[in-house]
Structure formats: C-alpha cells, structure tokens
Length: 363
Image 1 (cartoon, rainbow, N blue to C red):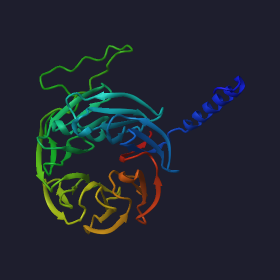
Image 2: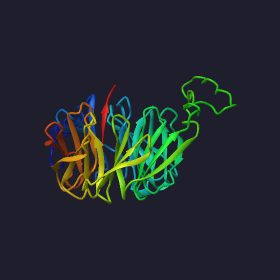
Image 3: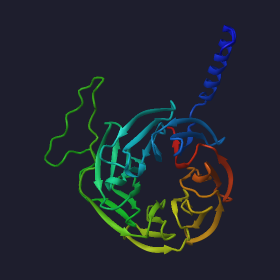
Image 4: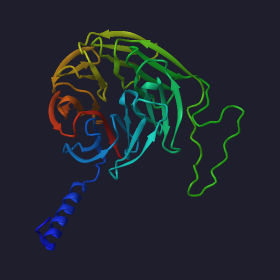
C-alpha cells in the first residue's frame, strides 16, 4: 500500500473485511448437500435450493467419502490414500469449521462411511477391517476383520445386527451378522458387574457406550470382479453390487446370502450404485464413460443412459426422491438429475475432483 495515505489504507482494509464477512455470512441450511473435493482437500456445504456453495472447510490429505451425523450437525470424512493415511476429518457443519481429526492408528486406509446408532462406521482397507467410532467417548469402540482384500464400502442395518461390505480385489461381499443371544451394545460381558454411574464434573466421561457385544458370523459371497459400489434395497431384502471389472450387477438375496441374478448391465468401471428412495430405480456411475446408467429395479432392465461428463463417481439421493446428485470427477462439477424426467437439470461447481457426497438434515 505504498503511496497511500492512512485514510485510503483504512478504507481498503474495511472493504476487505466486509467482503470476507459476506463470504461467510450464509448459515448452513437445514437441508444441505455435502461435496468433497479430492484435489482441493475441502468439504463444500451446498444449499440445494440454489445449488450454491455457501462454505468450504479443509478436511485432510485425501478425502474420499463423507457422512453426516443423524442430527445433521457434524460431518465425518475418510482420508484414504490407498492405505497411506489413517484419519477421519471432522467438520462442524453449523459453525462451518474443521474440528480435530480422529486418528485411527493402525486402521489405515479408511474409506466407506455410514452413521448408524449414534456412531460412525468405517472400513479400513489396508487393515482388512471395519470398525465403529463413538463420538460420545471419542474412541474406536469396535473392530472386526473381514479377511478380504480392499474392504471398501459399508452399509449397517438400523438395528446394528447386520453389516455389509464390498471387497474390491477379492470380488466378494461380506455379510456380517450378530449371533442370536449376544449382549446388547454397551452391556457388560456375562458375569461382570454393571459399570458404576458417572461421578459428574466437567471432565466426567459419562457412562461407557461400549462396543457391539456378542459374536459375529461372516458369510463371504462371491459376486463379480471389482465389486465396489453397492446398495441395499429400501425393503432390506436385496444387495445390488456393481462389478467394475465385469461391467455386471450381482443381486444378492439377503436372507439366503447368495447371488440370485447377474445383470449384464454393461457398466465397465462402475464406481457407485444407488437405489432411489422409493426403490424403483437403480443408478450406476462409472469413471470410464459418459453415461449414468438407470435400471428399473422391478424389470431388471436398463431404461436410460444419461449423458454426463467424462466420467462420474459419487451419487447421493435427495431424501424426498426428487433429485439425484452425481459427482463428475474428471470435469470438476456435480450434475443434478431430475428423478422424474431423468434429465440433467443443474450443475454445481464445488471444487476440483468431486467424489464423495452426503446429505445433512439438521434436527
């Protein structure tokens, strides 16, 4: 600011402060779309009504997947690095700021995420394991090995008695079920006394939440090569798995724990697969082509291929079933799909290399 008088310098500083405040003035909406940028290492908070980014928060060195807590106030992001990293980034969605990251120690390569029962569940690909993190105690409270290569994505039933993972390099799905008669989550082992009540005070840890107790059985189901993106049908009866190496979709019956049908979906390099909330349609993205494949779940037939950019990854459904959001990673934008017309109706510029997407509904 050489050559300027004091009044001019003060005016410029004031304008800069006002602009900065304006950029951070928008509150996080009650319903927000969360978009990860792998190249910028940020989480974008997007207002779905305007498709505008209202804030960006740094999240770590290789963000891949994101999930929001049940109350919509906190987001968790896996820093993957193909096993090089071992943290979950944490974001306060209301204050729009990063919180201290969660160090997973030897559970390296965290990737798939979900939030069920007040806990963040994750895969640890390099450790061939899955686990759960309890935000109340601030600890990883449960770990289980899968014995499979590249355990990548995860789904947990609402009652936390059944878990499904896809294992990319093994070409399998793990169905992990709690055995009947095991103690409830947080209960002490048989013969052990109940824990004492908390003593109170500012640093009281509160009653221990514990880990999911009892024994667990794992059934490994062979599906197709490169099994990665998957979803469980809204009625909980089927698991649909996109096999990137084969371009097929394997349909697994949950109760029988076996493949009942393999669809020649022609989706080589499939990345993600998602049901619409009503269970009528299945959307499959691929990073090897321009199409978003749409399958009728009842007839098992492909009904449309929606043209996107040069490839796509993450998919998230708007809870009311009106829209889908698809991360077009190579093109640095997110496309908005009208689920009634099956057309692209909007675009979001949320940062380079968008991938993981999530929906946050504040309660």
